[in-house]
Image (cartoon, rainbow, N blue to C red):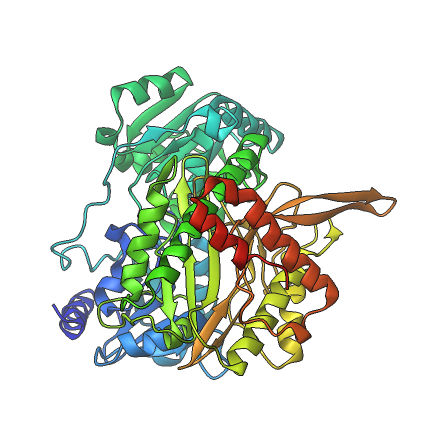
Length: 591
């Protein structure tokens, strides 16, 4: 079916149920960033493939909200669908809640699948539309009977992550959480976030592309743990292992029924930001809720010694694969290679490395104007041939059993213009400035975001995405709670956190530039004023010096760049074929 036909069927069902609008969120019951195919409902209806986007369908209109990463992409993909783009956080555009308030009749009803709606978002919408007596019906699923070839929710077997990779046993993790529950006088703790469940139980799966999480729910009590997962994907060996650690296994579909049977007036520890409205409302009906972050959210953000060691090994292997790839590309640049060709070749090199499982997200290979889209994804229609000129941006990463990588390199593939070099140099200044920052432990990311933007701001440039995100250990490539971005985030940055450092600059219809390394927070010094931290760079891939305008770099920035490139060479050269090592020597010479 075409999008307009899907909209017509949905509107017919809306009239049957007497609802004035239907909300389709880019979400699942677990508040995941990367959705299982089963829950990619907004994409199926609209054809818009970006990771962020919420859709509202009314009787005579349809609008999709997305952020600045996807404005250009959304405008292109929504052409002819009857769906209008609404630009998030742009002053001339209403929010989704404001649009509903302005366009829906007084006293009308709005439908949504409550299992995909967070408590926080429900409150945001309801606080505005309730002023007009507009109600939200949270038990409306208009899609299941329409999407006749909907993919299966569960795809692969669940497996245990060995202690040599996780560093802490599931029994110890559960005990730590139970101790925190006891301090808060909570008898039950219900988790929906897939990465937190997978981290807590040291289990993984391939149910979700690029993200080795297990689609499940978890209930922890003072003396027991219940995992709700697809039982057919749990081997007898894993079941025995989990049972021996006092983890009971029930089917995924039984979670709500189990919660309904718990004695009334119990006390639950629950994170409303990571719990769907459906489950929050189910628990809140009969129980007391302590609304706080899941303990696992912060526990997993502080990497243990095993995870840090694994991350360093992983970045070494990634550096080998990337060196081989960039060498191969330079030798074959005249062979009319396309963006999709490069995607396949980079995966081929990574897949030869020890303990590699899959990419950590959809690889972004963007040449020329395509790189102006920060989260571009090459398709048969957009696929560009790489020429002997300009800049090529590749943002990629790998999932290895011992860690997760995420790295962006913008490389010159021929002659570059002064404008390209100017912006390339100033983005690099931003990455270096954050890399060399020293700051008090516990500093919020919004307070250090300036370090990466200042060089760009001075010359009238900026970028619309965040500067840094947390990175999991063979888990989500994007994880919290810490981040480095302009928006206020109350979570501080502490020792042993792995994060990204990725400023950029994007010139529509011309080019895009992003430099990204992963960085580890480590102690710098302790004084009477407290503990101060610095960053250790983990990524091992040379930074192209050809497009640099040296006159815009300070002596300290040049020193950092030369030291970084030298470290890349010294770390990798003995593990590369002689011709690649010789080539890398040339690429990493001091400027």
